[in-house]
Image (tube, rainbow, N blue to C red; front, side):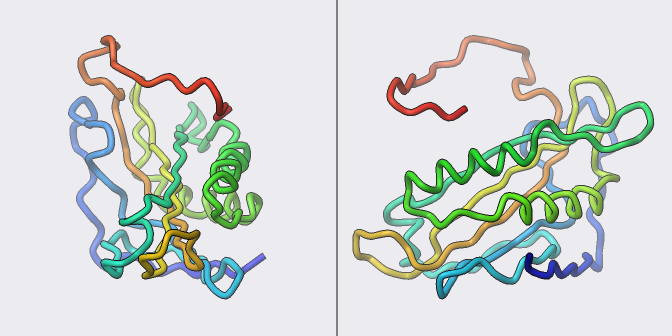
Amino acid sequence: MGKLTITRAQTPKPKFEDVSRLEFGKLYTDHMLVMDYSRGRWHDARIVPYADFVLDPAALVFHYGQAIFEGLKAYKNEKDEILMFRPRDNFLRLNRSAERLCIPPIDPDEALSNLIELVRLESGWIPTDPGTSLYVRPTIIATEPALGVRASDQYRFFIILSPVGPYYAEGMKPTRIYVENEYVRA
């Protein structure tokens, strides 16, 4: 397993004050996990301050959409312990999506270990009111600058965290969806 480096944010962001006003995916924690793929391997796993990425305008993610993501939530129980529901299975599902898009798989055990470190570091961001959680968004994007139609040779895996309230602020209302009948995500 690769070595995880941690660089702490010098200036922490202000945390949410009113949990009832948390919108889904609008506020982000101080840190994120990043790992790159090149020369045939994933490397340089690191927790760094949340910041923008610099990507070449020719990065394959922009032209051919070679990107995947997952999502899960972290909670705290009555004993202030952090709980996540089957996070390793989440990384296995991410790898199934990766296979479909010719993206190299991540090591689910290393990803889980790194996620635990990230969530532990950001535990102060986990809201505890009913209906709230810390949303975890693992993502992989193709970063190689190339305009040819092919799979990338370079990727970035990252995880961002967002304290959230309900997904639909107004409650569950009908949502238009597209139903896929050939591929199963679960």
